[in-house]
Image (cartoon, rainbow, N blue to C red; front, side, top):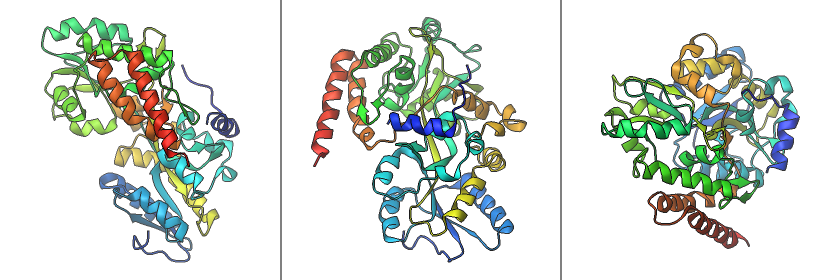
Length: 400
């Protein structure tokens, strides 16, 4: 089912309720953009910058590649000292920290509803925090279902169907599905399908009835040998490539890990049979963000709008294989691309990853709890209660 499109004002209201020196030269007339792209993503971004510079000789765009390791810390230290970029590309997970520190410029003043309508609603909302819009999304990332077509001609559309295929496949030494079962990032798809959430605004919501139900489901996946209990990302790729896992729960990066010649397709995650709701993975996004110290904000926003328009998105998807959030980009060749189109369809059933700083305290306790729950070392309720207590303890320790 397609969701009704929100206006920009409505989306921002919802988020309010819910919620480098030496890195490159810059000239007075230039807009400087930092990024950590490599390979095809870097080449495509540089090509788009060249197009901009050809069309705007009086307002050039200087694109500076910065190593990914430490990128966020460089932003944190450089912008307050006036040494940072005018724009930079980063994921939404540090919006809470950077907005609290006053490092970012809100951009909703420049964004009308027609511009907002370029993007899938959840993709745009990843760039919103506490009632303001802080960037526009370039690329989105979520999980979807990779399926070996030689082992599963018809992917399961419900979780009941997933369980039903286990005996047949296990008799052949094949797991129906592989993914890191104790990883919250992957588990979140089931959690959201059961109606749960990790955060309510800035408050963790862990030991809820929905959370317990989702953890019980994960335990059954292991107990009934639907998934292996110890498959990390690397093992998941190996099992899938070797035909020892018929399906894998992963993101677009998984394509590079699949052995040549493996017949596969990508599709959306199944409906959670217990609730009738689709499994909905976390949605992450890389966006173009503006520094609060940008010298020419009007020029900077023009670059933001150009890099995220439908034509640029189509080029980035075609040349760099990015999963772009622009709805209109998925026509022609992109509509025929089985991977990109599948992740575009999955985008209709995702939950934006929380950008609040409190989220950082959740990952490890939740992972530890899931690890104990799926092997039967603790009950789902007790394991999540323990995790909730640990997260609350971290929060108390961080208060002044």
